[in-house]
Structure formats: C-alpha cells, structure tokens
Amino acid sequence: MLVLSRQRDETIMIGDDVEVTVVDIRGDKVRLGITAPAHIAVHRKEVYDAIQRENREAANVQPKDLPPRGGPNQPPAGPDTPRRR
Image (tube, rainbow, N blue to C red; front, side, top):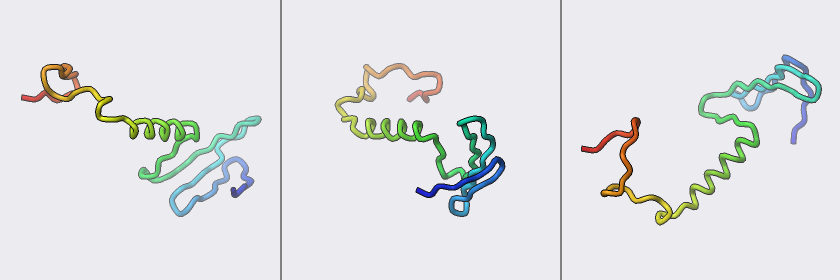
C-alpha cells in the first residue's frame, strides 16, 4: 500500500485519468473529491462490497428459483413495462 500525505486542496493522480483531492479535514474525518471518467466506477468500499456480494448471490440463482415467464400466470405489466400484443 502506498501511503501519501496531503493537505487540504492538494491532489493525487491515479493513472492519467483519476484525480483524488483532499476537500476538507475535520477532526478525524477527511473529505475527498474524486474526478474520474464515466466508465470508471467509484464507490465507497462498503458499497462496493455490497454490490459484489449481491452480484455473487444473483449469479447463484438457479432457473428453478425464478418465477415462470409468460403464460396465464404472468403478472400484469406495470406502468413502465411494455405490453405484448
């Protein structure tokens, strides 16, 4: 792990496209501003971990666990669901 010291309004670069700026320091909290291209996802670690966990759980869903598609038991379409003709 690289450890850097920065003061308020100072920035570090990650590669050529990601900037991390120290926006504010209050007590034991540091506020960071992150500028990154849209194709690079930026999340707090706990949010990233939750997304990864949900993705793993979704990948383990078996077809038998899903509700049936089509047929008379299909739930009615919601306001945002296109209706079939």
